[in-house]
Length: 145
Image (spheres, rainbow, N blue to C red):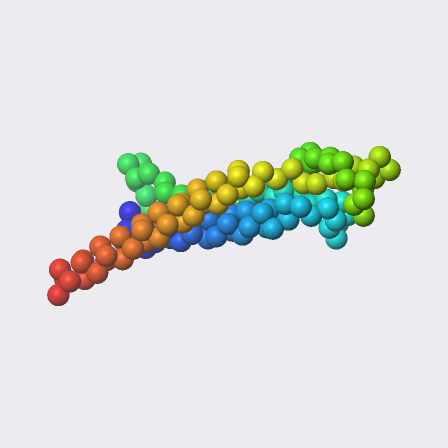
C-alpha cells in the first residue's frame, strides 16, 4: 500500500462520517416535528454505507495474488425508518387526530447523541490516520534529501 492509497481510504472515511453526522443532526433537529412537506411526521433517517475501490483500474490489474484488495467507504444513500412513530395524547395540539393523539417521530435523543459521539470518534480516527500518513510522507522526503 502506498501513501496515496492510505490517503484515499482516510478521505473516504471522512466523507462518510461527515454525511453520517449531518443525518444525525437532522434527526435531532426534527425529533418533535409533526408536519413535513411530504406529509405527516418526520421520519428518522439513517445512512447506508458500502465499500468502494480505492485502486485505479490499472493498479488493480497489476496486483498479484499475494496483494490484498483495499477498500474505502462510500455513501450509498439515505434510508428512512418506516415504522418508527409514537402516538402522544395531546388533544389541544393542531396536528392531533380525532381521538386527540399526535404522531411524533420515535427518535431517541440519547441514542442519536451516542451515534453522534461514535461518528465523531470515527472522524477523529480518520483525521489521525491521515495525519500519520502525512508525517510518514514528510519523513520519507527528508530521508531522500
